[in-house]
Length: 281
Image 1: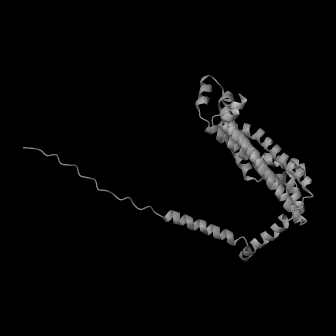
Image 2: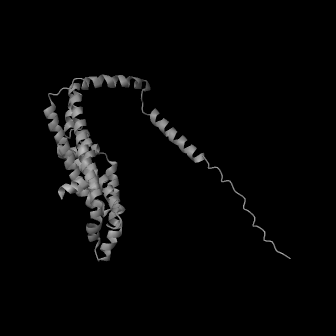
Image 3: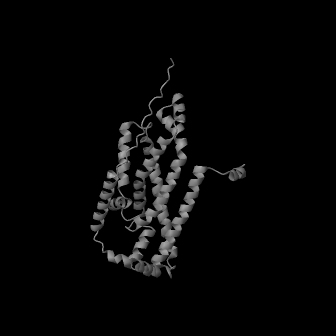
């Protein structure tokens, strides 16, 4: 008598159910309804949109066909004032945001320090630079220092967030080595975290300087000085040929400073190339 082993029954293949499209459809409908309600409450005459290209061409012709270069020397002085305002604001931002941002990082500051600092950074980020400048105008007056102070305070929120996120992204090998050698939290931050995070933080600081250059022109529109103040005055007097010259100066200066700052940031992040190293040696 021979025994034959019977094959185990093969499990029936189950077709996965088709995913429901109810939630994506409801989400799309809600978003669409919000967009429609927001557009209907703007009190916009949509027929006027057809006239925008012609108006842009008209005023562009007034500004850029024959710019008035007689006021170029003053425009360059005011542009340098705006750049100085942006640079001073970036320095103030870095001086305060990096120490506070390191205290807000996990593993550096205690929880009763981290949570309030992160909340402070969030509150500062929620307030635009223009609003901060308007508040400071009542104390410091219509001076470029007001713009620099507003840029510095406004940048603390963003730079502080970048700082603690960069510190927390650093690999823990160096930190564990310093702690194993008996280092305190301050020594860990100084000898393990800071050397690893410094290039990224310096790059972020230069990027903040680029942002400040653009924002300084906006702060000038409310009386904080610089090229924005000059641009506002000539726009109010409808001297479009001078406005065109000022816009050219603003764009050129911004592109130049962005190129210089970008080159420095790449040098910080990538280091010197082999050719530069050979020249040094």
